[in-house]
Image (cartoon, rainbow, N blue to C red; front, side, top):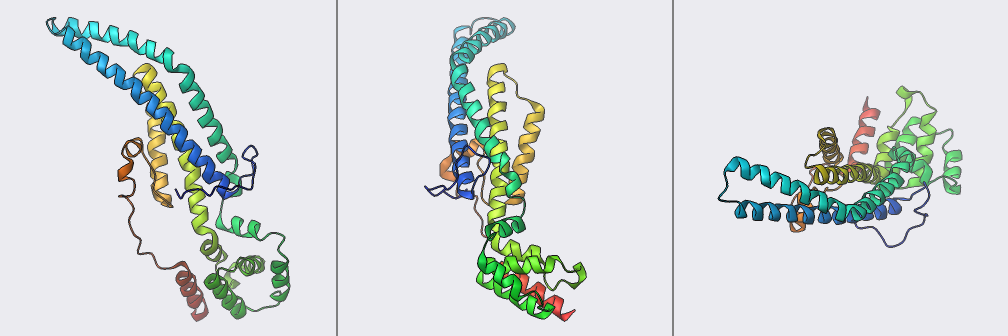
Length: 279
């Protein structure tokens, strides 16, 4: 996800979060998840080393007895490591859950590009003036203005136009308001949508690795949920996402980025508008 600017305009302790607040919180979630993963990996590494030492020291014993003795010893050592790391792991998972909950509460504010467009221009005097000026405009003029708003990224004009066509019958609308709002806020909406999914995924990954460390077994349903969230992140595709393996190999994080051949968004809406006029 893009690096968050240093400044933020909202209090992270409230449910209202600006896009920058969400970026900053997601960065904290990633750091927290990394710290938890490092702690668990270190403990698991100690377990693996102890297992190897025990197997080497019991090399002359029969396989069945050796496996039984190693399993009992490892079980006891695991319990010891669980106790030693419990406070740190619990603090990290609690903080992780709290950060993810902040992001989740902001979801209602970022449900669609249209919602972002209308809220961003709320209270704009220029938007109000434009609304009055286009109140009696016909389909051709509205379509032309929509092309202008798309080409110039004029948010106030776009918001006024979307409000104007909202009151028209669907078949009479000279342009698709959803397409226009997507041009101005679609990229941001997709970024924030993926951030919400990523936050949830990182929490589940931490809980799953925590359980697997404590019991030696992961949660099958939670593993499925994680896989589904990863798939959803890929489908949104606003930015790349890191798996546990990626975090351990940061030098490969940029290798997965691929260019897109998708045409410019302004070209899409212009083509759509032209098709409507020709129909």
